[in-house]
Image (cartoon, rainbow, N blue to C red; front, side):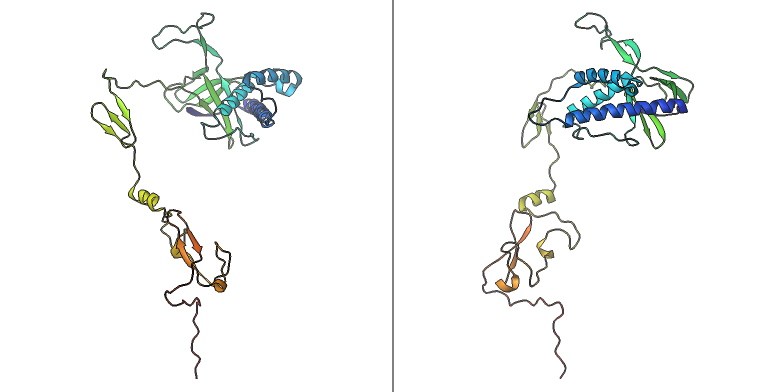
Length: 310
């Protein structure tokens, strides 16, 4: 995505701030509609239904009608994409947009251009049979360092050209952050053909060997290291390398009066209690063991009593 710094005039900046407010208002309305849904209620409206509701809202609200309809519809389209990709994108459900934080809007190109297939033939509409006319952003180069783009309601807005070629895109996004305007063109990169040799190769996927090719090569995914394999086998906690950190048996301090986590009884009242590490659990736990022959009792006094002088 090609991103450039914009330099609008004060009048153009005021209009673009209104576009940001309209896009944010429409987005939050869509979030509210979907947040209102719960089990047993009717499903929330989709993109087409929201566009029809937006048309009705523009008739009743003069402030909303003063804005650009394409900017507001693109905000609904962005919400629909975010809603559909909430699991794949990793961002979850679409959230509210706040003023001074989420300032921006997306614009679709106003110029119409004919679209063609990969082999150069014109792309035809399957229903009407006419050639498909796609959208394109109107961008003009002023000189080696400056260019301008047409923004709805603002006319031509200048931006700093930091690349050799002019961006060719169907849409662009305008953002306002830290007192600066930026424009980002959604440029679709050209597909890169793979180095084809004309040969055919078979691939057999397995467990021990990830992929075995028909030409004899064997490909394996990265395996676990020796320490990771030992940690899984023994169930020991990871070694932090710092004394006194992590749930290790060597760092547990046994003092009189403490409560045993297993029996919730006093160490001093119930006899000796030993620290035992349960194998495979990965954590140290104190459990009570029956008293038996063993080493002599250990003094827990930090400062042993000194003999008094005669």
